[in-house]
Length: 336
Image 1 (cartoon, helix red, strand yellow):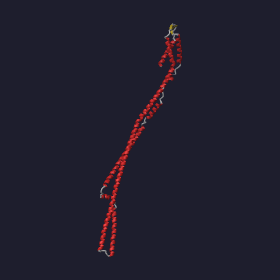
Image 2 (cartoon, one colour):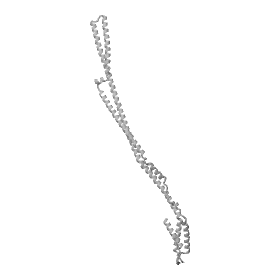
Image 3 (cartoon, helix red, strand yellow):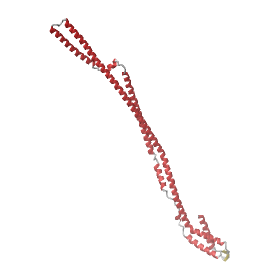
Image 4 (cartoon, helix red, strand yellow):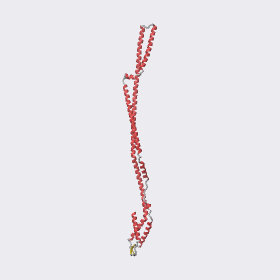
């Protein structure tokens, strides 16, 4: 069935522009856009970020050596303290010996008693006296016999004068014997006194030596106490270092991570800019065609229309092309 229709056509030059636009649009859209050139890219991790991660892994348990060193210092401090206590105990025992020695010296001062003198007298003194006196008695008997023999040879034995001579000899011998015994006993007493004085001097010297030893032991004890306190202080210092190490490491890791992240962000911005540039370059022909189509559409409204009669409905290729161009321009504008 034939139907007569009336179409409104644009001016001829506008129609020519539309046809040219449709031709360019067909050619341009036939070429596929290589989207791989502006595919999203992620900047690689920065070397400083990698180093920060490595330090974080290495920092786990890094304070343990300081803790162990502190524990060793504490053990050493305990050992020094124990040794110091032993030194002080030894000093106390030595001072006890000094007290005993000084007490013994105090008992020996002043006038000696018979028991003190006897304590220092030679146990062989009486044997010496007895032996000496026995020898004296033997010599006296010999001398007395010699007197008697002399008197007998002179025929005076038994006379009064001979009796007087023997009496005087015997009396003098008794005195000499007593003097000899007294001399021996005096020598023994002097020797006992000398031994007693030497014993006092020895004990006094021993007391001084013991006192010096006690002072030395006490000094060593104080030194070892000082060493123990020093070791304890070193242990506390090591513990303090152990508590500071993680914080210092975290500060280093944080700084490295922040600087590395900033550098990675900069590289990511460059990649994003390159991606946007590649995207703009890829769609630039379509963008130009969009502007072209918008211009043609604008011209269609500013010139008088032409009328044409057809016997059957027929689609207007210019309107179709212009509509397609306007749609593409709108799509591209949305993509931008």
